[in-house]
Image (cartoon, rainbow, N blue to C red; front, side, top):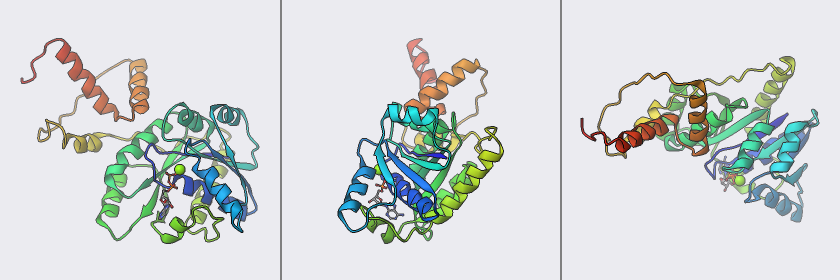
Length: 278
Ligand SMILES: Nc1ncnc2c1ncn2[C@@H]1O[C@H](COP(=O)(O)OP(=O)(O)O)[C@@H](O)[C@H]1O
Ligand SMILES: [Mg+2]
């Protein structure tokens, strides 16, 4: 099983999750490797810090570039779990997603951070099944409940496991973690996904459904000059290839599709000298 951990936003526990997931797999008698594909090399630094103390990690952390990931995509040891700590953007991120059987998108419980998580999810799901993992969660806060409401309203595929904000995770940086906490439940969920993928023999369908961006757009409208204008639905028939281009370009620029579409329409209307005010 190859897993990429990806989110365009930094500081959402990608590296922490990579290290913990691999630690749980090894603690259960499995084999794991962490591929450090982030130019910040946090996973590799974590491994060397652990080595310098009494507790080296129980698995290898290997640096990975596009070529490494291409090789991994072409074939891997089915008994080894490959965990890819992905970079925030660029062709290496694309390659990490292509190389993976499943993508985990960690996100904290802040409704504003969901935008980036959604666009990473949407991009990942063009090629690979993916789900959101809520991390650094503070269940007693309004932000947590708003985030859960938004995830439910958008039907966002997510893990049942929620990783709370805890000092034990924060302090474990650069050590061989022993208290594996909620990541044990997460790996149980991953093992179920892996089992399902095997029995379906490559016919595994993503759980995911397309994510509507209306709410995201509504959020963004709050800061635009059309802040108080109501939104209308526009249905539009376009060729499949144009839709694909729209989706790919939106993902590459980390923009909701609707925002890109709206900008494109506005730009063309401006070019043709259309009136700003109807
Ligand atoms: N569950 C958690 N609770 C509290 N702090 C956390 C948790 N997970 C990660 N952190 C801390 O958040 C920061 C960012 O985590 P990191 O794994 O480096 O994120 P990323 O790889 O996405 O940039 C680090 O200081 C880390 O120790
Ligand atoms: Mg990192």
